[in-house]
Length: 316
Image (tube, rainbow, N blue to C red; front, side, top):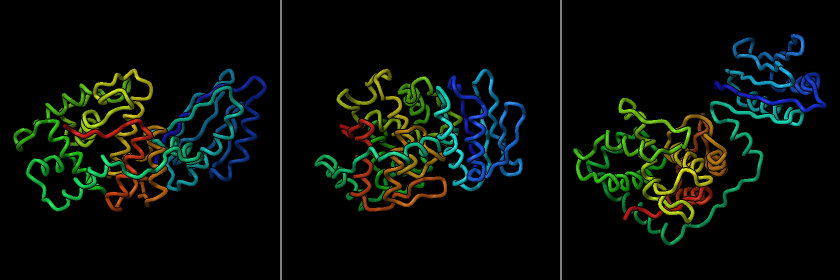
């Protein structure tokens, strides 16, 4: 596995680089690192130079750096986070991020689970009946087209089919020729998931990113956010909506539909993955193998959506 860890902070007034050195020295064996010093700069090398070193080069008590770790043992990787956690009290502020989302999962896994499983409501039981009816029916041409475009190979085909059926209704697709990539792309960009961090989809990315567009459109039209109305009508400025939408988009794709990118995109998705991993086995990249019965899967799904503030209302 490969991951870049970003870390920055300013030492408290009563601490200095020697205090950092003491803590780092305690963790050298557990992180499988080799220590070297250059003045006040602390350098920890990994894997005989195959990874970039972890460097604490203090400038007026402040460090702002990153380390690209290229190891194969997740235990060694999380041991680096253990060390960084112990360093935190030495700093006025000390932020840690990584480009694969492993930090979010590391932090969440050390806390009690916030998501409570609950039985399905009457409304959701009707959706379960819809899923069971789907099992007896073969795909029609438009459903098959949409599923082929998504390239998902899902663990949960029942949930994907519900998403696809709603999507077909939202987009007014009655036959194969009604499937117009540019229209789908334009609607996705108009919905603008992600707030300031969102990016505009381009037609040349369509086949690869269609799975994300599918979920974004479904969430926007088939769910309410708290008591504020349909998701597409809720302002991005509403507290929590942006992070919840990102978690829902990535969480549904990763946990249920086998489209994953490694770790969690934010702490809310990490919480979703934590709940699922308690009850289902996970793959090499942390993707959860949801391969149980539809009723159980829907209980997980709607409990997670409750936590994010979303309620399925379907397409009318």
